Image (cartoon, rainbow, N blue to C red):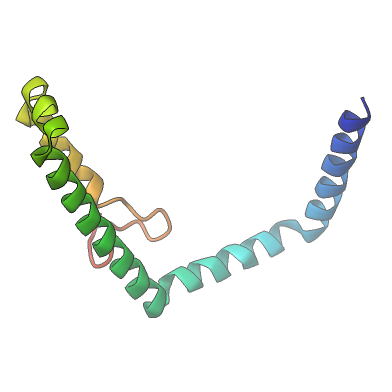
Length: 105
């Protein structure tokens, strides 16, 4: 019971403090986050991270396919499912509405 009261007290305090900040503060935080995300250095770092993730994904997929487990899985699945996994390589960016660095939606 005491835990529930503390939780409700924390919830009420968060609501009061959050409502004091208001919509303007929310919009300011959102605008700063958008400006940060659009910065060329951040976009370059995101591009490098995406390229490394794609490389690791491809290497891992190749290693699994060449292993005994991959051979077992290869006999139970068709090639039509492997093409759908390639769509995972270019996730959309929810802030800018584009696919990865340099791509368009």
